[in-house]
Amino acid sequence: MDIRKDFPVLVNRDVAYLDSGATTQKPYKVIEAVDEFYKKYNANPHRGAYSLSIEATEKYEGVRDKVKEFINAKHREEIIFSKNATESLNLIAYSYGLDNLKEDDEIVLSIMEHHSNLVPWQKVCEATGAKLSYMYINENYEISDEEIEKKITDKTKVVAITHVSNVLGTINDVKKIIKLAHKKGAIVIVDASQSIPHERIDVQEMDTDFLVFSRT
Image (cartoon, rainbow, N blue to C red; front, side):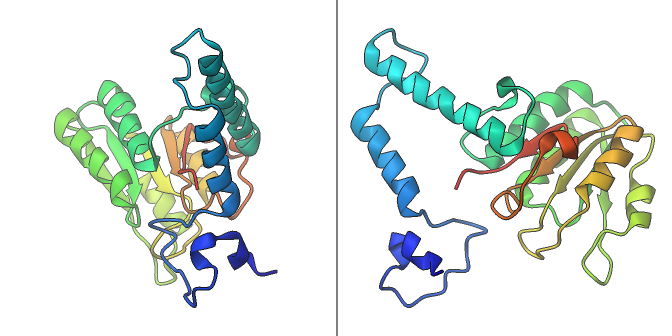
């Protein structure tokens, strides 16, 4: 099956596109869905009592239900839309982080985090006096069980971890990290931007507190 046919930018173009970690190409179905919305339903959702606005609201809220089913969230109200994963990670850091962290609390990140899951936590530490602790990788570019157990301590209040590294391709054992973090009383943010297109994610089974990913 040649999936290149699904992407108009790749049709009749002899290239191998390898930059999906930064910008994904859009398949016909996505382009057609956006085109259909602008042609038939374009109006402000939640901000009008006229028929077109009501239709736009129904379409908008329908996506929330689809995402709920897609990741097996318990309630549709758990689904929060933002511009992208970067904004979502910033939102968590600058709301939950600033409101709940204090001096000498610890935030644990992996050394392989994207800047969007690193810089906001550095800013939170500057503002609150909390400390950053990094989980480092071994010679196989993995975070060992020993490193996880060493870095997640009773002082840990937040663990922010990428599910799959956008640079290394490492698949982190987030379930193990979440289980230990919860045992220590910490909350966990999983950046699933790189994993969500490739594997089924069940947030109830994973038991993460926050799951962040971008739309394609």
